[in-house]
Amino acid sequence: MNLFELGKNVILVLEEHGHQAYFVGGFVRDVLLDRPIQDIDICTSALPDEVITLFEHVIPTGIQHGTVTVMIEGAPIEVTTFRTEEGYLDHRRPSSVSFVTSLKEDLLRRDFSMNAMAMDKDRNIYDYFQGSEALENKVITTVGQAFERFSEDALRIMRAIRFSAQLGFTISEDVIHSMIHFRESLELVAIERTAAEWMKIMDSPYPNQAIHYLIQTKIHQEVYPFRCIARQLELVQKFSLSGLEPIERWGLLLTAEEQDMDGAYSFLASLTLTKKMKNQVLLLVENLLRYPTITLLQDLSAFELYHLGVENTFHLIRINHLKTNGTLPNLSKQVVQEGIMKLPLKKETGLALKGHEMALYLQKEPGKWIGETIESLIRAVLEGKVSNNQEELLQYLTNLVKLEDENE
Ligand code: ATP
Ligand code: MG
Image 1 (cartoon, protein in one colour):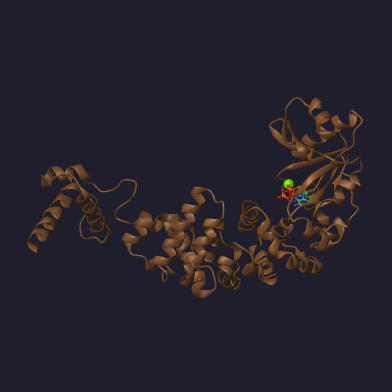
Image 2 (cartoon, protein in one colour):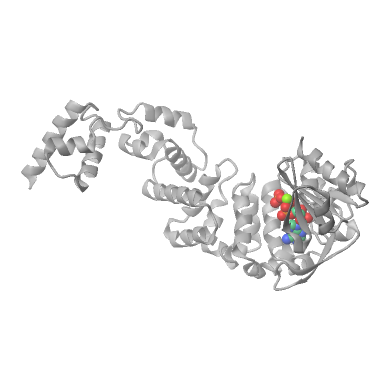
């Protein structure tokens, strides 16, 4: 069953028990835009306790805010009781919520017109705040006065910027003015939440759009953690980031101003990236700083290509080429792969002479020298000085040791 049908079943059950229930928020927006659906949000007049009794498998995910998650065929469906929000403290989330009985009142608390529409099970749209018009004009406008909405919750500033990057929408003038007015309040929002929006921007189809708004609102200079990379954000604007993989966007951004790696590293440290992603970014940054002039596959020595491998080589060349020429090179991962396949030594098979064999042959205690010797032999094989077979490697090793002894 598709997600719509699953949600519809939840709505049917709620209605059968005398409650109102609608699809709402991002789900309705994405259906109208024909975008892939990530998650289903349903709003209802039923109280959380009532929802819990109506379905077999319910998780009380945010019950104090009226939200429970109904699991249907393994899919999580968020069901939230119609509510309003009060007592926004320090421009952050509300301190209390009250349940209400009307759909319109629930929609009124939502951030943007495009996010404040509801849809019933027969796909009729309930649009009290010009949401369809906003979608048609590809513009981000608030429900009610922008000034008030950003005063309540400064995270909405980041959400506006993130949606502009995901949808390619512009942000309306009055919204931008209010974003500028409340930009400092963004620092009161938990850093993880700001970071989560930034991560979505980095994965979005139009990251330049977001950077444009960060600069226009001067968030990039005034607000932590963006101010760590203010100059970098300005510098990357001359490149189109859309054609880059997310990891490449990170590499380009963080090395845009090589004089300011401290700022780049602080920015990276302030975010909640997975360890894997962080290591990937750091490795790419390291490669970019080490090989800033490599813009073609032929620029790399066999030894460098061997150590970098397909992915790192591909990203390194693309970013350097973009920085130097303003365009992406005509290079595919397959071409890099073929270049690596042609090397006289493959990472998978490795050297035909193993460390313990060297120790035995030279009658030397194993130690740090083994790693160093392996590197020398790898280099020699890749430079064509010796073939990768055991006999020749042993011969080469003997000469190497002799030379070292002579030099001592
Ligand atoms: P996506 O799921 O793609 O991130 P979304 O619009 O569905 O986008 P959610 O965070 O899932 O965003 O929130 C669901 C709905 O809740 C939104 O569409 C909006 O109506 C409302 N909402 C979420 N966060 C806020 C907020 N900070 N202020 C006001 N309304 C909000
Ligand atoms: Mg959502």
